[in-house]
Length: 316
Image 1 (cartoon, rainbow, N blue to C red):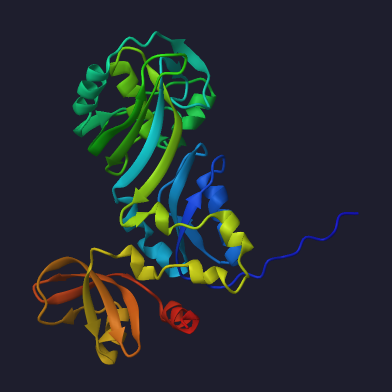
Image 2 (cartoon, rainbow, N blue to C red):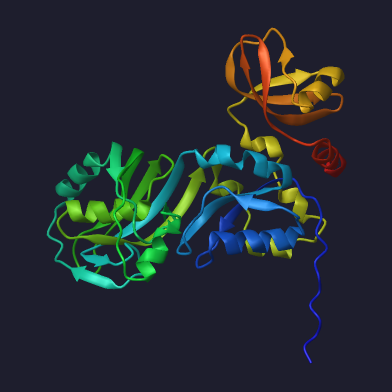
């Protein structure tokens, strides 16, 4: 007989875990593992990483999930290695080889091609992606051997730096540093650079080293989280308002805080501002987001009184 499974007692957990996602694990599997280790009731991540990618994966717990959408728009920074001369069906090492060509480009040609990909560019999303067409993920069409038409997307490459290059020998490659806007597919970028060089290419390594204000030096691994005592694991979480770094701050007294949490607009001597983080004064606690127009503080995403109480109770 199998031993009965131990049921994990879930609890309210609020905050942001900066996880260093390991190789070979999907973003959702990494999230579920972190959620289990923290015994958390609710969690979500801010943008997926492929199983073959590693690096910064912010995971939002509890009240932080209300602001995760804001972070999806953040710029991302990667280090990636492009194998030259070989194209695959998925534009990365997971796919089947579909073409091989000799690598005859020079270092000068590499630099010139990289310059061409700087700034605003258009990308056709890869078939092996979670992007949906007619309610169905593109990778589902790809698994069925079907290719569907995809609209090009406008993205921005802010930085594209050549870290290392090898153009001779059996395994020519480029190692690149890329800072880009949301929605950029690094697999597609690597494949397109290979095509522009006349030899093709595919990704063999990808690491996200930063996303928005968060970088890899702030991250914890799943192994590191697992070795901690259960009471120490929540201390790895960053506060919910970590997701609101560019927001102006407004603090309300108790009466106005209560009305604001009810969804009512507040009047005050505030300049027009698109992004505001709103706090209560006694005790000091995040209430939610808002924007200011013509002296009115207009509520956006709000925390519930229960969430606020739970956050305050969890603080040392």
